[in-house]
Length: 290
Ligand code: NDP
Image 1 (tube, protein in one colour):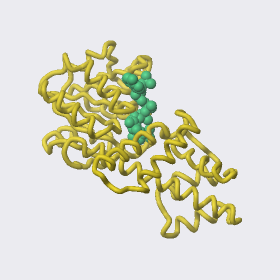
Image 2 (tube, rainbow, N blue to C red):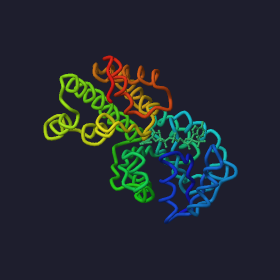
Image 3 (tube, protein in one colour):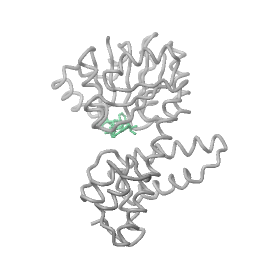
Image 4 (tube, protein in one colour):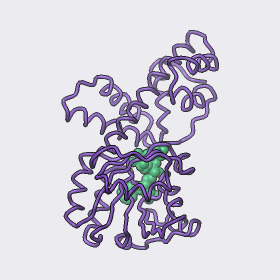
């Protein structure tokens, strides 16, 4: 199949590599050098001009937010072919996606939102979970392509449903990271060593992905890699907050999580990793993790 892949960032770069194992893949990236390197290393073809991406059976976008996706849609709309499937793997905004899908539908282009979870390691190993919003027929079309990038592909509902559930699950993770950091800090201040605190937490009912995988490396071993930008995580939680607002939902925990993450982003900056919010938890208490 002829595919175009737009956005070779931390996630897009390895995803496009997997697709190239079975498909003819044209790649485009804002910083062109990355696309040239992808073509050299993985047998894809670099699009010198974005317009070249219009000549494909499916166009895949993996960009920071729906805003950048819309800018690309605007640029490709005049040349994109009827019958094309647009797969947006960005963690985007479901309301924006629905409007984008309408604009594409006027040109006979189908749309699915297909955000992913599983982090960079999941993209590298093609073990991502991919949640897809769109018609059953377009889900099947997208699945045929994206199964090269992921292990679990789930049809969530109509257009936007994938984006909605993605930001909501990331919000659950954000709140869990924050509360686990708070409680472990109190344990530390009480004189319990971090190794023991993690051992007990992970053997009991406080166990989570945060306590088992995300926090021990940082709080106990003092390693703070950049895995997922806090900038992106904050964006996801803000979208979740807007969805709640839109539905007149009473969600005080969600609102607080959004406030805490936006405050942490303002303090830590756009280049921080999302788990660095634990540093803010310590700072709020005049403490340090080391
Ligand atoms: P990166 O920041 O690593 O990459 C972003 C990509 O978008 C780059 O290719 C960048 O190009 C491109 N880009 C940025 N701005 C523009 C623009 N204005 N016009 C065109 N291209 C642009 O992001 P990730 O790969 O980490 O994340 C991508 C999406 O996946 C986000 O929505 C994120 O929330 C989601 N996600 C990320 C995960 C992770 O662990 N990293 C896990 C799950 C989902 P350039 O190279 O020129 O900067």
